[in-house]
Length: 139
Image (tube, rainbow, N blue to C red; front, side, top):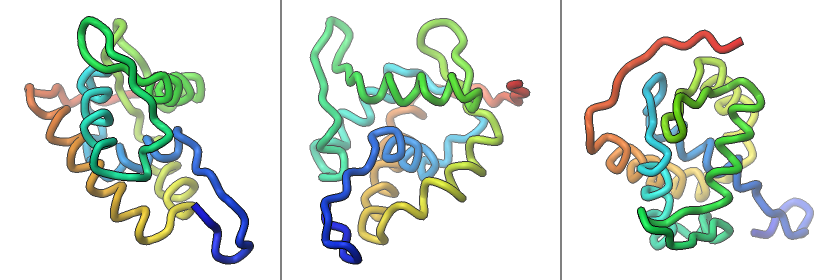
């Protein structure tokens, strides 16, 4: 994407894209299944150009993106999420505030529209089975 102010190429971090899309999914304070999240991003990649930097490889259970896994690990390392078992991810309350103040302003209105669409796909794919509401206190 071209930054209109400086006319220089600007590449958005995969982490920021995923966090903004998760924010727009409105699936906060729930346990997310990583496989469902991977599936949602794979589906959305075929629709939204902002996801072009996410690459997927097929494994026995479906499609897997290293970029999605890495973004999740960054959230966990920053203590903005926890991972229970190998596939369940819980976002903490601080995460939502950080994304709204630090990540969303990096996107243009057109990019935010794409992210909202991706968020709807995430919500659909990750809500296909009942989700458990949780309260977290990650320190």
